[in-house]
Length: 341
Ligand code: CP3
Image (cartoon, rainbow, N blue to C red):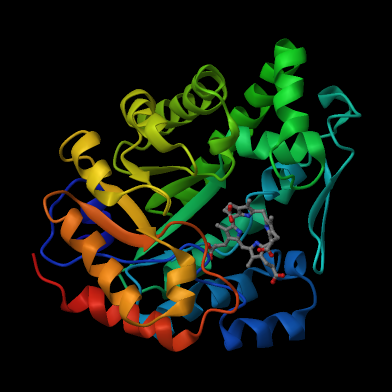
C-alpha cells in the first residue's frame, strides 16, 4: 500500500496526518553540518550522489517524516541551461551571465548537469522505507526566471518584472525554455524513483493579477499537463508562495494535485475557499517552530483542526530556519501524530 503522504496527495482523507517540512534536510541538523564541513561546498554536496542521498535520509532517520525531499536545489535548472552557478557563503546563489545583460541564445546548455541528480534519487529510493514517499522538485518557471534574469536573489524581483513588461516576447522565450527543461528534469526524477513532485514558486507573490496569470499560472499549467500525460499517478504539488487570494485561480487553472500555502494565509479561509477535496499542504510559520512554546502548540492544533475535512499534508509556510532547535521539531511531530480527526 502506498504511504500516508502519497495517499493524501492522491486525495484520500486519512485518519492520521502526514508531515514533512520544507528544507528538512539542512543546516539546523548537526549531522548535515558535519557532512557539509567534510565535503566542502553546497554544490559539491549536491553533485556527490552518495552524500546527497545520505543528507536526504538524515531527517527521516531522526524524525520519521512521511516524506523525504531530494537534497538538491532549484538552481540546478539554470545551471543545466548553461549559466555558471556559485553559492558564496553568507551571500546566497550567483548565476552568470545574467539574462538582464546576455541573451538566452548566448547560453550553451549542459544537460549532463542533470543526470547526477537522478542518481541521488535512485540511491534514496533504494534506502527509503517503502511507506515513506520520495519527493522530487523543481522551481517554477517564474521563480527560476527571477534568478536567471537578475543573477541573484532580490527583494521584489523588480529587474525581472520590468523585463516582462518591457519585452514580453523575449521574456516568454525564457519562460518557455525553462518549462521545457523543467518537464524533462521532473520526468527524469520520476523515472529514477520520485513518487510526487513539488514546484517551488517562492516569488509568486510579487506579481500583479494579470502577470500572475501569465507568468505563474500558465507555465505551471503546461508543466502539470505534460507530466500528467506521461505520469498520471504522480501528484504535483504547486507552492505559489505569497499568492494570497490568487490561490483560488491558481488551484482552479493550473490543475495541480495539491496546493502549498504559506503562513500568511488563514487556514480557515483556505478550508472554505479552495475546492472541496483538493489536498492542501502547510502552513505553520517557521518562526513559530523556532520560537516553540504554548503558541506553537496552539497554532499547530488550529491548522490540524481547520483541515479536518479535507486531505491535508502538515508542513511549514516556507523553509525551516537554520537556528531552529532540533527538539522543537520532535515536539511538533508528537503533536501532529497524537491528533485524531
Ligand atoms: O527542502 C529540502 O530540504 C530540499 C533541498 C532544497 C534546497 N533548496 C537545499 C538548499 C530545496 C527544495 C531548495 C529550494 C530552493 N532553493 C528555493 C525554493 C524554496 C525557498 O526557499 O524559497 C530557492 C529560492 C532556492 C535558491 C537558494 N538555494 C537560495 C536563495 C539559497 C541560499 C539561502 C540559504 O538558505 O542558504 C540556497 C542554498 C541552499 N539550498 C541550502 C540548502 C540546504 C543552504 C546550503 C548551505 O549553505 O549549506
